[in-house]
Image (cartoon, rainbow, N blue to C red; front, side, top):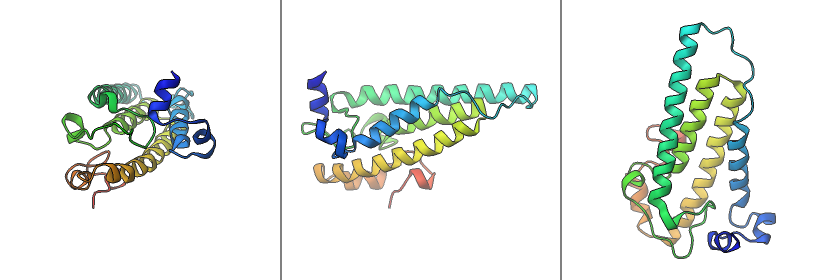
Length: 175
């Protein structure tokens, strides 16, 4: 385990001073786990057919997000690091799901979060979705600064591929 954490760039110092974006990772993990909170306020007043429809839509969106995350993790392979700093021996992946989104794992996580919000119609889960979007965007921007340094071709990749979600300005900051 220590070998993997070191390969990813974790250090005791980094955990305390956020030298490689460790705090963004911890915030991301916390926000993901907070999705297990019960919904608030309760939405028992929603009519039965609409409630069932929202549950189905939420499950479908979350499942789609889960599939995107799994595929992107597999495609990233040994290049995976949970920190926003690329590993020394990493290569730039630009094919398959990385041809549709520069950060498909983040896209999948946001879809899961959105699906949970739709499923629960909870203000808590809406807040978690917004906070997760902010955290992942911030983490992605740091990651992209590092990827531009490591991979000069990343500048062209940015022009062609949306950041997280196409046509959503906050999640697609192509210039």
